Length: 245
Image (cartoon, rainbow, N blue to C red; front, side, top):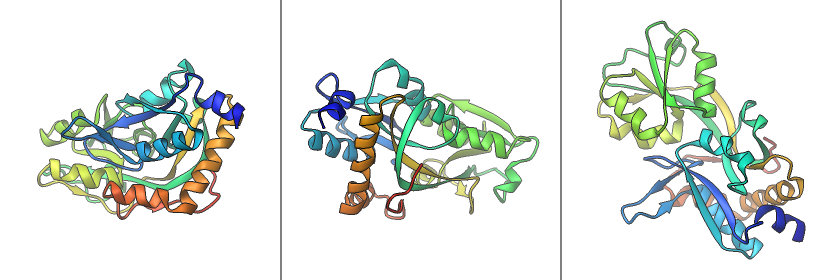
């Protein structure tokens, strides 16, 4: 426990990396009207800090790419991130707490009828740079033109203004984003089926083992399900017990 606390909270606080977006998901947090951050990652981070007996400090980022890129700079101790092979070069993953599917939100003038049809020359797909979802879209739809944005807000505005034909995000994120683009629709099926998992900077095995045990407890106790429900993510699926990333 002492080694885990020292690795996880060397500053005396548990620094939780969070990604901010206009709508919540298993990863993304939101900023409410009062200026407070709310999200699944925050609920889980607060519970982990309580277990460690230390205060929590939220370190806000614009997306998961920013979080992974800051992992080596000792800016945070734990994060909750979508898994892909590229991201494993930057962070170490513990167990999964969420089953993730990513698909496309098609704009009101878009002619894309299926996930497969997105892989067509002339189709413009927007997404947030350095995210697992956008990387996978680039691989699975190489014939399309991919347009990267630093923030989710900018990607949504581009779809609304007709600058892109579709957005690549997780299905639950798109459920919250679709009302912001009148006339848009979410495609059936997905181009990425993965997990969202607890993660930490590389080379800290004691802290990784600790957060992995924590996430398994959080699934078993119902905390993960409660966090999803609290954020309105009623259809989000909790990963099975013991599921590796």
